Length: 85
Image (cartoon, rainbow, N blue to C red; front, side):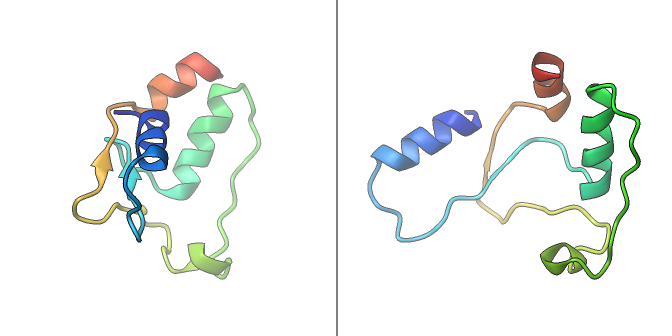
């Protein structure tokens, strides 16, 4: 299952009256994910975190993790970057 398949399934399925959590198999801190993505594109800019920045301030450098029962897609970020960088 990947993101597109999950979104398509939800779109044509029975109304959920709720949300669907979807995650990949790997966990990254937000800043780390930004750095990995920039480097894959040959971009050497730095990533600066701001502990007062809205919803991301609540995370405080930790990873955002899916809720119990989330649908875990097999696609890894590194594999996606290799195809799209």
